[in-house]
Image 1 (cartoon, rainbow, N blue to C red):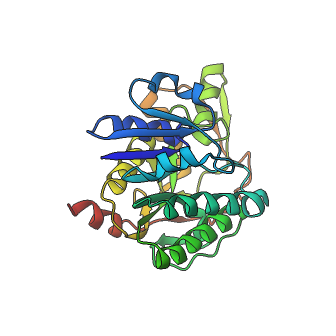
Image 2 (image 1 turned 90 degrees about the vertical axis):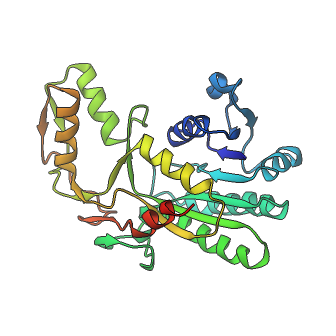
Length: 280
């Protein structure tokens, strides 16, 4: 089996490559900067490309794979930028449509829990999305566009709706990386929100494993939450990181307001994911 990955040099992409390498899978890694994947030159075919300016040969190479894991998305972590629907959305759709027209048989696209918007509680895949920021809106629009495309072309589509991820190597805008950086500097305290918001977190290695498990099935299952299925308060999560790593730092709770683009309590329903994973 041959599987391609776009956004292969990103945080999630690098872990997906590592997960693919554990299996008998031929890897095609697409990235805007091939130098970032220099260590993979002997283990993967590396393609340097931008999704909005890709040669016919490179498109054909991706389309000949058995499946594509599509992680590429520009403009993050600014969730509120109009770039997501003014520029990124049309570029994304045109890129994926070209691959489908060339015969790509199976596609897994990374979605986001922000597609649910400000809805609270357990969020199952049958909840109608109501995005509250441009990023979530653009992702939701892309999903709908691809669903229409499924009517005209025969390809298997999985929309892997990711919840929260943490792990080493994450961008510095994330809570985990900010905490580890504060510890490395020797800071006495770490400023954060009150930490009472409930979220759904998974370590990056598990997220990568789930993405690969879904992609290798090459079946049409539509939207599936990639999540833990259990809520945890951000405060308890961070306290767990402190204990697990023996970090000596005080939490300065309540220094930052709660984000206005998220509900206070939400997590993913996992029954569909578990059902898919049980299938052969």
